[in-house]
Image (cartoon, rainbow, N blue to C red; front, side, top):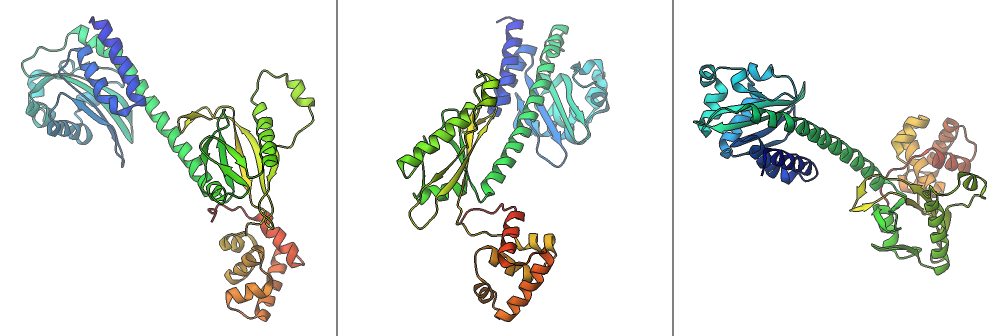
Length: 384
């Protein structure tokens, strides 16, 4: 294999390691072959966090020593190397001075090495990444051709690390969004382009587990009644058509609006579930299925008891904690006597609290108060 071919192979392996971190050792092995080294190390130092540390051709305990030197007392000659520039150590420090240096005596000499090439890849206040290759003691110094190979590879290493960081950030953002969806007290079901469920939050799972109105499995979402299933599929199909870019925009604009909403009947006396359907675009992959041109279903229970955070009522309407507790019970559908009994207070005391609540919320009747509380509350509690 020619030098050019080994360089191309190393670059391919570098980008492969971005998507499969377990492949970093393979990528580094390819780099040593392309540059003509026996040892290689990629070390990332992040303040107050764990970074990347991968090495090949070094006894593990000595790899840790070299990593320690990079992290705690990086030599000045390495600090002076411009970011993204591979440099032979002999271009920055004499062999005699190198033999007297801490990094040689503490890390390089114990594992039997001497000549090396070092390249800072990232140099930020809270994050530094260094790439280094080395040769065993007694081997010749790296040639100009070896250095040229390193110069071709290092930019790809920097790009790969940047991609790795962006993917990690995207994963965090996606996970944060999924965490929010999981806590909603509304059923949420994401369907992919083939209309298969790729994400079902706990509330939707609980609704489906009752097998009353909503039914779902790994391949489809249906209703308990056939006619409701037909309505659901029409709503989903309507939402999905908004992804069809081949349609004439004028046609979409003048076409009568079709509500993307349907009801799923349940056993009496329970009211039907209300399903709202919306188109959603996603460029990423979730559960190995693309969300591109998919839809999201929001499933709501009209008769589900509201559970408003009393702290929200305290801060929003300046209620006392006892007033907020009473208001919460009233919003959940209890009458004043039931709420008083739940709180362990007399009906007269409850009437006094209610009078104060009506005054602070500028409402005049209990029904008006409950409507206000339900409109003003944003609930992110789990479905029970």
